[in-house]
Length: 546
Image (cartoon, rainbow, N blue to C red):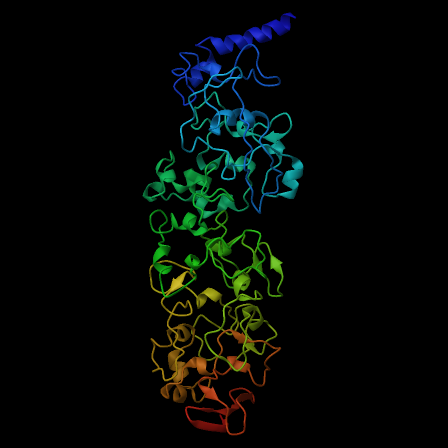
């Protein structure tokens, strides 16, 4: 009896003595409602007598609300209606119960509208009241084992994560009643093991957040992207982008909030306004983290190509995936889905490979193929060396340091134009999203400018000196574009052969037509030898040998 009496006496003392450590921490904080309670701070929540059973002497009236809970295609935890201590917190913070409403009556004053008033829609708030177990961590590899949680982050007796896991209602020393400091997202990454985060550009960025127009940034106590951490993109409560708790409901706005030049050093908004671009503004609400690249509707968004938790400034050599596309999903050379790409082209194949909603070619070819994965198969009669070494061992026009054993990236051709410092296939004034000009119209005047993309790798002097084909100059002087004969990606082996489609030969049939023998064809007859059967610019080649 004495032990029980002492315990009750201690609790009563803590709740009633104004100079107790707990009250000293509450005084002056947002939870100090003594003015409303006529000097009594603790009675808003607690009572020494007649409290609710199995609660910390709880006296506040609970809410009867049925809540809309957080949902996401990437959520593994089983989240239901709030339980335990979270119900106690929500008795004020859902706005349905007056602050002064106790279990015996009262009322009149409600929590003010704003982000502290969560309402009954919790789909825009971090999930609560779910079992945080080793089983959950096993299924979701980006959730840490509960044994790894710091002592400040406490689960309840049922092993559930509650509001009180992150918030300590009696202590506001870290702001927002957090249980620990959250600079560089120390609290977030205690639970979330976002693979690649520790070496990512966002984790270490010293870019100042002050330039952002986002009010959430402007209110932040942290000054850099690194210190702001997860909060640079996510917000744990009242997020506009409910799934994954993003600041903005439109996925791209969360990226462009910094990458419009206001925070990040590169300004992508200029490139994304160009004639040819990966235009995310044309699509809304289509992308999903768990979508299959083989069946998803046509769309483009930043996170199709970039994992913001893992992107870095690391460089690499073709075809290895660079730092900007680390730990992003893709489609392999064989057509399988990989959760983490090894090669840059695997990212491109997500949209430009087997997906039936891929874009069509701008040029009408004799052999039609819009599946870029098939165009780059190593068994093909010819292809640019993007996925493997090229098959042509005689290419005298290559500029140093390129050799016939060199490989290139998709982004060596498809990239931003200009010298703004922006890299990647975001936008260009050269269609289709090319780093340099590449004219495909018939009767194009040959120049460094017209075929700048080709001359990036192939010596113009060598081409015009007919070192690789004895009639290159003649064709170019006749204003026949490179694309009239050459298909830049490649020709799939199921449609073409090494006799008819070596050297990327696949005619543009709006320029090259059927000849007098009823053929539109090229025949490879050995090194630097061949013949054509076709009509071009009114001249019949039946055949034309070289």
